[in-house]
Length: 115
Length: 416
Image (cartoon, rainbow over all chains, first blue to last red; front, side, top):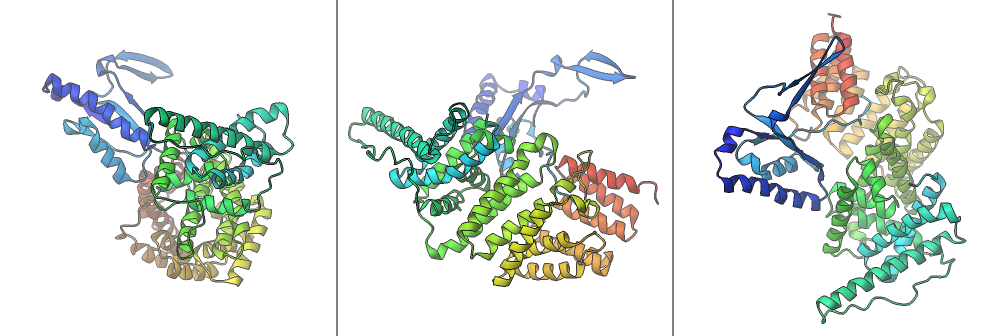
């Protein structure tokens, strides 16, 4: 999960901003070739957010985000790795990790052991 | 795509033999494997419409050979265009085998392919994917669905695995005798992982995955047929059969996980249990005894017990003691602690668990928390039990396990 802070991003030069964008293409190449890439999405700016609440079975839709924060989720990669170490190694290759941060978290699974 | 189970079975059984025939005739494992996959796909679309050919095997070899020689020709033509000095003459002749080309070495081919696909240079994910495709005859799409990844991802994984095997200089023959025992251990581990992937899948949207248990059993049965004097292959097959026998009882009507002690034993598959017990009994008496046989023996004790209360825990403790000496690992200690708690009381089990707290290999910490919670509950320490259930629920990445653990914790709320 890639976090973005607009105030940090705006301090970057145009070249640096372009470099971050291009570095995503470079990041994707090796994980596609290794068969680790499951999917990814880049999310639009939070100003495009619609928040939906249902109270007493009545949905209410408002403009703007649910959580107001300096950082927001800018996008995510879903990768299928052998180890957690590999996942954090990949996260370190994501260009945004240099300026903000990338969180690594397992995806929940429908499979389970009887206990 | 493929809907007919009998056709599936026929194609999957043929796959390793066709591939073996091609690799021995032409070399080129990588290209042959692709050609066989294309031939299987062609058969799956054409046979239901036009009926089975007189010799399915001959048909598949002919089609796969044609695909392969076409591929090699176009490769070499391209290479000639690019570099006139590198002319590779494609193997010619014998393109069309006799329709009844029954290959006497077809049996060995299956084994050779298993060893090749479970090459120690590959990651576990690649070994599994390649084994299912090259030996199991599954399509890339089927494997991708079973592992919940896009087809392109799985295709890439398989192609990368084949490149690695090529780079490792692996040739199409059984590993030399001094390496064989160690390589067989890797093969058995891969088969075990395939089984587990399918077995842990619960019902519902994961039905595609549960098909993997059947596939693992089929491949292990094939290996057992070829290595009938190896006790561990028999032990693994027995372990799979005895574990899979519980499948009908391990999920409740709501899709939730039912623990072993609460399962309706009347729903266990008796035929699988009979076969599993016969296999492990014979293997144990023939010796030498290995970890899969011991795990199968433990599963057999559960299978033979008419109810959870009647379980012969003393015998299970004895088996775990042998298993801890033969193949010590934290998961074994974890299960051993449960058996100890059932014979000597929960505190004895909890003491044993305490030895695992500092163990770095204890990667499945949620399992440790879950077992501790059960034993604390047995000992009547309900607050501590609830905290351990909650901790396990937070740590697991499995939704059904989380639901089960949360329910256990909730059941203890308000009881103190």
